[in-house]
Length: 264
Image (cartoon, rainbow, N blue to C red; front, top):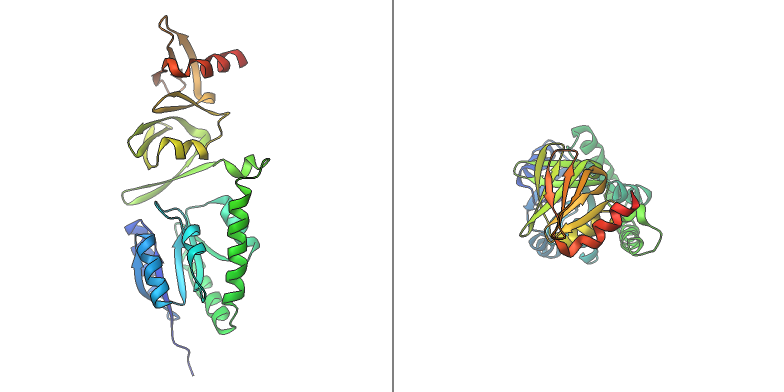
């Protein structure tokens, strides 16, 4: 007797990415998408009420990340497949704990292999044991962010920026400067400007403070991209970057800039 297709829910705040994954899953006879959500909170309500077999979860979403959603799922949990535009640290953790993940853009062959593995686990009743390991992995991941000496794991090497119709990976080392516009950050890198949905405080937590210097209430600068610093009589500084951009600091941050000049 042929087993019924597994039921699946897709959760991704980016509509194009969500529709693309649903389209690819439509080619897999072992799985049926029963719902999709762009808002993690609504997805959590649906999953709790309907208990699908599988949930495809984007890792980076505003409000509630895929990791946070996973932690809130009650037993019995569905199988979880994380979808990411390449979060190195998370991928390494999930590989170690044998949790499925998919990298964007999604390779149809990799997706087919993931679905096959999901079917094997469903038939072997291994889901709950793996989910317990997953929760332990997520808890360990969260704890490690607060442990001294984990600097390499704490600061991003890549920013995942979701813009209309696309997801862009921006290498942090190539960022010249960032300025704030309300709840959005304008990330200037390699001659392009990317719009990141974040706050200045949240972004600063992701970036190495020895590299990114606050020079204004609404501006961060990559110190490795500064070509020249000129002192003004009023206590402000003019910073010329290798990109040719010129920024003015505010007097509030003159101590930090003096320290930077003294270290050169």
